[in-house]
Image (tube, rainbow, N blue to C red; front, side):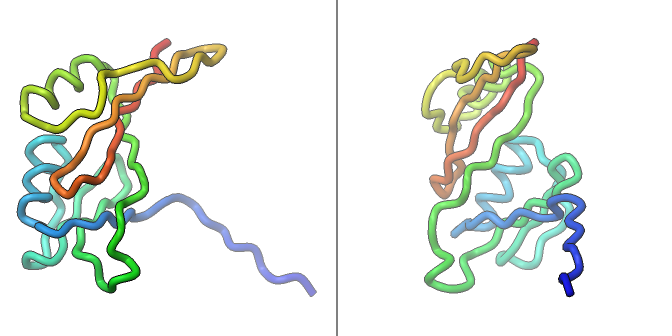
Length: 127
């Protein structure tokens, strides 16, 4: 007898470590422009990122206290988004660069860091 399938429909939430929740909240809300949904004191903050909920929280145990996976934020104009990050004092690792040429578009990335040093990426598919 086979076990029933797990019918995953989509990613519902991504957790990201943050040591200073108020500073991280300001960054994701004011710098990146994500819609702030709600906060739980100074322990957690939740944002809407295109239908996926982003949870900022302090690590709940030592084994969870590590850098995050890389989140890729899709933008329409990577050069303008890069310039906005620089104007807002965000640590940018390098300027936007094409990383892959696909049959119908070029994939461009631009790495930057949040207040906790997590690496994030701007991502743009140029036609």
